[in-house]
Image (cartoon, rainbow, N blue to C red):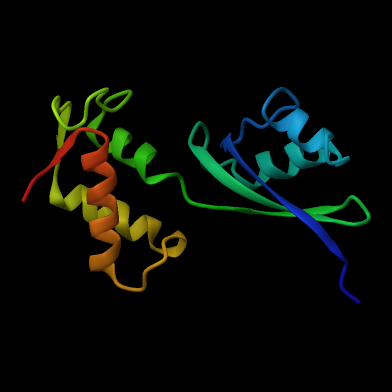
Length: 141
């Protein structure tokens, strides 16, 4: 018999660095979940991705147990890493802060395919290009 789901919780946590401090502790504590159990399990699953920001979807069950799914890093974080800058432009329509190659965009799109709502690589590439443009990063044509 399956457990009854009472809710979901979405967080963004650095890989292999979950600890009871905010945002993890308060978010899980308010739902009555075991914070240390989550931190241990999350850190074990993400030990190969230290420091990367990872979205995690936590399924909360009625008996206060939980399961979680770790997603791929946000496209914006992957873009910043690819062009080696710390943040995007404060005025993306006026000030461009970097240029990303078409090859980097394709690599990011391939990595993000499983979490995007498209089945075709071309659609994923367009989504990544749009994210880059909204960050003030030029996309090579």
